[in-house]
Image (cartoon, rainbow, N blue to C red; front, side):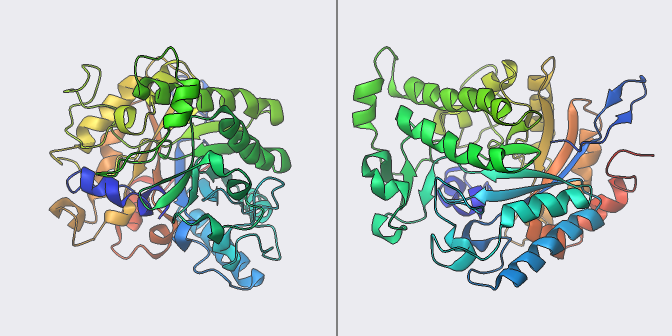
Length: 410
């Protein structure tokens, strides 16, 4: 799945923990101030055909019909935002001038699908009163390590020095300034072409750790790592640069487009840092993905954050009831809006802990979050489960919490 499909190693590292803005209308709060309605979003993952399209190679008409059905599902579930993955593996779901058409559309990377998925998604979402957040993965190139399987004109083939094989996959090297500039240019191409409502990134910066393997950025570190106390600090600086530069460039390309990031739900454990959460996760965003999300929030570099809180209330290693207040405290006093990422895909899964066998678990998350004024909404992973809802957990959320108008009108 997206970050979750490609995060199997992270699952093991977490000892059983699996991984994985706002609507434009305004309402009036009790203080009489104008405010945006709460965020009600769903991710739609295209990587590995997780949510859409259902398989590669479908006729354009069927791909479009499936996409429209997902947008209609969002409306039926009283959501107001769709987060559509449009650059899953250094490719594109629009006619990009930088990267090839995605193989998840046609089965052949670089082959025109016969229509414009992102352009259609934006127009049809807006027609339904939905926001469309374009979800990009900055550095993932392929779910394999064979560059010859990429399109002949793929930038990773034209610039093999940009690419690092790791954990059975290919990644762009975040330590190269020319890479950081290129991936920004590739993503901003979509911002320039379409009136999207937000640029959305998930939790993949540096890849999740793979036991026994080393991410080989020695040459880049030797060239660019002077002045840093260690490689980890240099890597965090590289990620900081990517985020800060993108935050600056987005409004230069199109005013009003917001910038949101959905990190792994644990920044650091308290045992690692007194500012961290009361958790014992085997993966920490700051240390393992080299992403200092807390700092980005404190410096208001991003417009919203959606931590992936994919654990149940009471889960010993990473308790939703402890993490939600921790993130609320982080955004307090900043301009960054906090939405919580919800693991709808776990509901009813017999491999998950007992609380996930209760259709009301997710509804309890929203009830808990209502006590935290900094929490301004939720996003659900992901579209397939929002649509099929095999366990009834999404229907329970809608019945308990989403009976009002999703755009915030009375």
